Picture 1 (cartoon, helix red, strand yellow):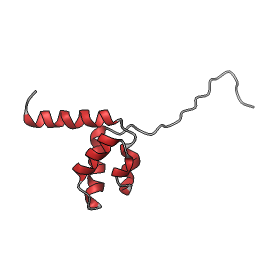
Picture 2 (cartoon, helix red, strand yellow; picture 1 turned 60 degrees about the horizontal axis):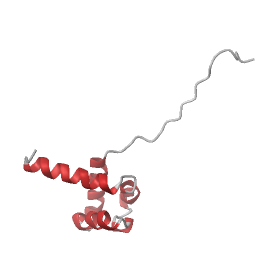
Picture 3 (cartoon, helix red, strand yellow; picture 1 turned 180 degrees about the vertical axis):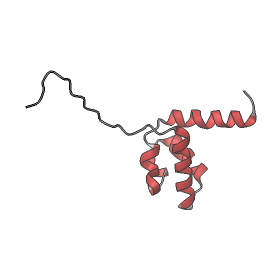
Picture 4 (tube, rainbow, N blue to C red; picture 1 turned 30 degrees about the horizontal axis):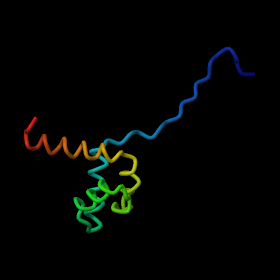
Length: 87
């Protein structure tokens, strides 16, 4: 018989959050491998919200859809400004 005086613990492992930089890198690589211009495709997705701009290769489409488009723009702009040393 079980001891009912002790508390049992149940832990569900959740999927780890993927950083925006990792998402953009993965999507960029997947688009390049499939022969697309990754800049044009990512801009098309950000501007329209249409996920068909992103290939499903390497699960890039489902991956990019997990990130808000404004987060993508923020990451890209931050990296651009850092590269230009405008900070």
